[in-house]
Image 1 (cartoon, helix red, strand yellow):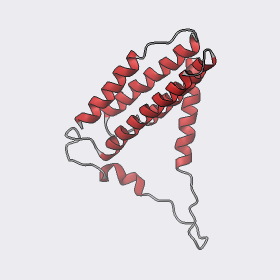
Image 2 (cartoon, rainbow, N blue to C red):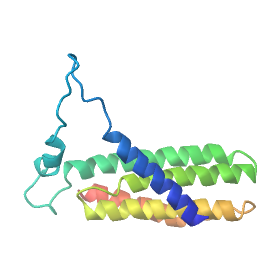
Image 3 (cartoon, rainbow, N blue to C red):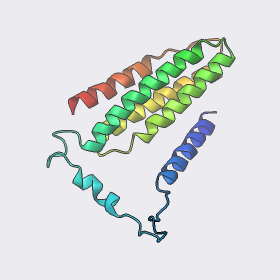
Image 4 (cartoon, rainbow, N blue to C red):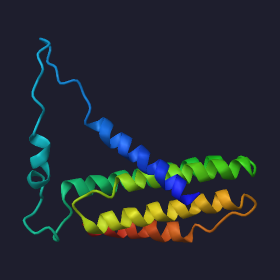
Amino acid sequence: MRTTRLALCGTAILAATALTGCGDNTDSTGATAPPSRTAVATPQAVATSTDPDSALQADAKEACTTIGEDIASTRAKVAKAEKISPPAGHSAVSAQYSAGAAGAYVNTFTSSDAINNAAKQVAIAMTELADAYAKNPKQKPSTADLDAAVKQVKAVCAAG
């Protein structure tokens, strides 16, 4: 079950990543514009400091904001899904945690290893909760690991 969920999440992430590069490279005259190469130089251009450990870079700060919003959104959706009676409600909760984990994995590609690791811990905790809800719909699992992972994200983002 877990490998299937990870495969589906991975496929969704891969598709989303592939689609972000898609676009219509034509101008208003109909001529094809050359592909932009500015994105390749962006990570070096956004550095906020010459010392990478002194402060979070722009992409890492943006990831912190996105991770926080994703966690809040996932928790709100889980709370709504929990109102549905079991076992269907637990399936809905499992699906919400799986979606939240996929969103967290998207944020593991920043210039900050600390943020990448913290986001990965959130994704792992959400995946484990999704599996627990799917495995035993009669019992509500503990969210202690997710709470700890969220605290870790907040601490890493606050330190930057």
